[in-house]
Length: 216
Image 1 (cartoon, one colour):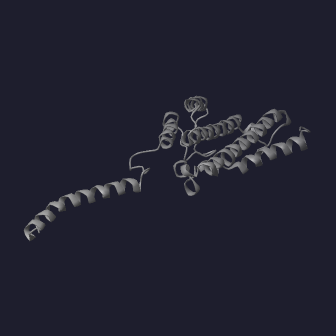
Image 2 (tube, rainbow, N blue to C red):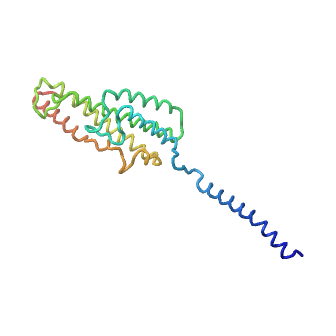
Image 3 (tube, one colour):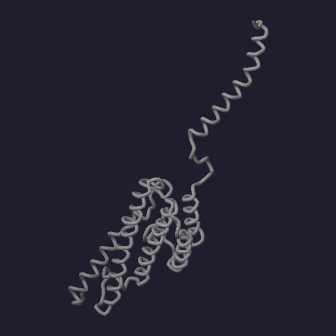
């Protein structure tokens, strides 16, 4: 029979081993509790690609989150070059079938659509007052009024296809990326572009052309 002293020594030897084992179990539990967590400062591949897309804003004077027709816009002179860079980025994603790559490719399409909307709007604006009937007109100016009608109609359709079509569909299909792209109260201000004003100008032009110039 072991003495009380021998039992005490054995228990004391077991204490460090117990705490070592308990610590190991605790570490394993913490690791497996959050196997896919992203530590602060790290970004998913989608977020990294998203940041790369937005880095073009600095290069070309864009502002994805604040752009809006007739307010903050990318200058029409650099839009083709910016679109070319975006298309190159999209080509780099070709053949990749993971959700992040597919979602990023679709976001690039949205960004290109936003730029094309701005391009069409600015092309109409460059025609100047001669392209609208609000301040008076001559029937000899009909070609300019017709051009503005066409450009504003294209602007409106591009806006609807991009924002209410492509971007809204992206939010629906990939809700995990909504917070990165900007959703609900954090959406890009481009949604607030005054498309109704374009409709009014196009409709006014069309009205006067038909009524006074027998055009259309």
